[in-house]
Length: 550
Image (cartoon, rainbow, N blue to C red):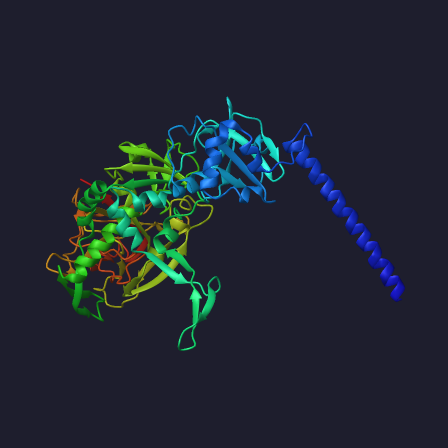
């Protein structure tokens, strides 16, 4: 039994060894075909190849200044794109700069024009952790901004290609933002999110202190919540497009956007009438809380649409989506006054004027589905209805369902109503609408109608939250609000209505979230003498607040 097992094991070892030999043979053939079609293997190291080229003497000197010469004599594989003496003619180096430049021209592993077969470009990570684009163009092969002017030469530990230009040593988008000469404002905002977390796994114990506790050669991990949310522009392995505001642009944007976020302060008193559900509150105005919220919300808004996950510097004609998710149409205007700078991980557009349109960035349309709103009801039975899938209203009603509110009170004077919470309104103007669905959307052939009235409840200029007078007529036509028995109804509740204070509740960074201080009551408005003509049933689809910019 033991002999059989030994024979089997021996058989496996022989088979495995043959596989390895075949694999190595294939690798050798791949190397020959891919990098050395003439089958001329060079036993020289990369360093020896560079030293043997008179036109690379300056680069050879830089290799030694950077103490990279010993590495290029090892068995590790590298690709060098070496600039000629002419390319380095105007270059004056010190040791630190030489190290950066040399590492910017060397990559691990081997690359040649054959790697571009079927590809327009590939991104290659250099020894300085920057990435460069290796491309095939109509007039030849390029690495970064330099043309390859020699055949690929094979060394025992890699390949050498000669280029006609010094590679640009571009900073990352993050470095441009943080280290720019005129970008202190955006830098101060973004670096406030920096955290450095001790990594005990990567850190090496080097001893103990007098209390017997371990002392580490410490490693810290950099974290930044803003980068995690909007784009890791500090990393070299991702590509982005970024609009970078100068201090002038930042200050101008702050002045324009700040009034939209005028905010209330500490709440002094709150009362909720349990019989009517009417909420009243009183707030301080202009206190430290209000100023802090307004300041923070404004800066958050300025920075939220600066990053785009683009793979090219070609600005699209139709639309561009920021990493925040906002869509900008005909987006060329965003970059019209900007100066282009090539970054190591994308494309930077430095500007003295941020041109984002309020409606596309911060003062946006607010649309709330009635069946999903945080709501309160009175004198009502509330049902969520689905419209008929094969009916005319299936694509007209948001989500193909709506809220039906019918009267349950035996008191003939009671009108059913719903109070909807409306979040994220700004201290700005809106056209406010409410849309209604007809009975025939789910009961074919049937029709009814009702009269409607609205009441807005919000924080007024004096800091007190209370209801405004009832709105029962269209503010433009003056007609009494009634719903269409044979179609969708969109009623204009208020035209160009301006809220005195922002009720911004969806900040990603501000822990002091506000209460929702904007409420809209929707109620039937059918008198006892009108019940034969109108019923007391509300079928509400959506609440819409359209931004108005002057």
